[in-house]
Image (tube, rainbow, N blue to C red):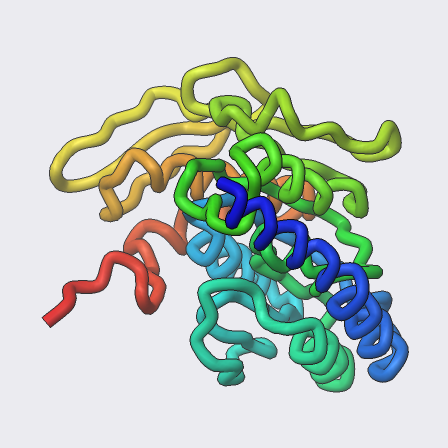
Length: 265
């Protein structure tokens, strides 16, 4: 336990005296490119990569010029950019460089996957988000955090710079995330009453089907957790005023993400 506390304290010092100044430097160096983009952020333990890729593809299908930064890579429109394989969000230097490329190539929106480590290390420092959403929280990534409460509090920091917060009402993080009074809160769920609640769920060995408000979803990805991913994406697209018919068409044959549910040979 003492080793863990020492490690965390050392990392906190490094975050303040190394990662924060570095992030400020690259903000200035690249001219604060994120200020010219509508930023959408997704955090959480599981489902982040799937969610940001769905949002990105839906925006492209709506003829909105958007870019993507995730742990698996980056995209400017349909063009993929290699940033190496990460288990966390890329370094602040890479983030700001890609934002600058997005602006140069005429992108108007950027969807980013934001890990707890990225928040802790100020990799998105200075970025103001139009919308931020959270998938869920679990005990999978607590190596660099004192406890579950500390982990959730770190993720909650993302919402302090967001105009709209989309929260999972079925998750334990819902009661712990506190947002500024100016931030609008919307919730999604399966079990509890919320703004975007999944109803009429039909889950079998062939497909998944459910409704949320007036929209019906049917997909060949028949996993219960996929309902939460779709609900989060639906909520964000709804707040962006995107055509509600686009996402149901997109997930009918669910676009599997590289590195997610692949068969290892």
